[in-house]
Amino acid sequence: MGNKTGKIFSILREAKHLTLREVTANEFSLAQESKFERGESSLTIDKFLLLLQNTQLSLDEFQDFYDNYSLSEDYTFHDELREAHRIKDLNQIKKWLHYWKEKSEKNSEMF
Image 1 (cartoon, one colour):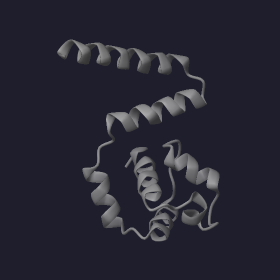
Image 2 (image 1 turned 30 degrees about the horizontal axis):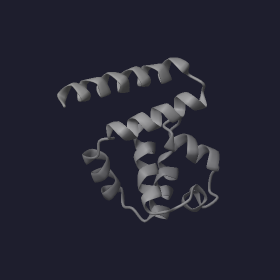
Image 3 (image 1 turned 180 degrees about the horizontal axis):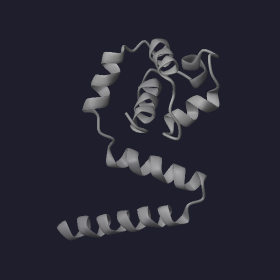
Image 4 (image 1 turned 30 degrees about the vertical axis):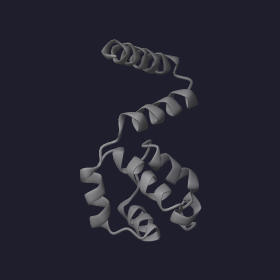
C-alpha cells in the first residue's frame, strides 16, 4: 500500500475528529503513528488493524477509500510544502513556487 496508506488514514482520522492518542489507545507511541501518517514509516498489520478498530472503520471501508481516492493537487502541495519546511528543503520550496507561478501565468493568459 505504500506511504499513501498513512496519509489516507490521517484524512479519515481527522474527518472523524479523532486524536492520535485516541486511535493509538496507548498501544504504541504517538510518534510512531505520526510518522505513519506522514508516510515516513509503516506499521505492522496488528497495529494498523488496531487503528482501524479504534477509528470504527472496517478494512473493506478503508480499502475502498484507498482505491478510489486520489490526493488533490492542493492537498499534495500543502503536504509537500509542510514537509519541505520541516526539513528545511529550500529546493523543494522553490520547485513549488516555480510551479504555482507558471500555473498562475497560464491562468491569467486564459482570461
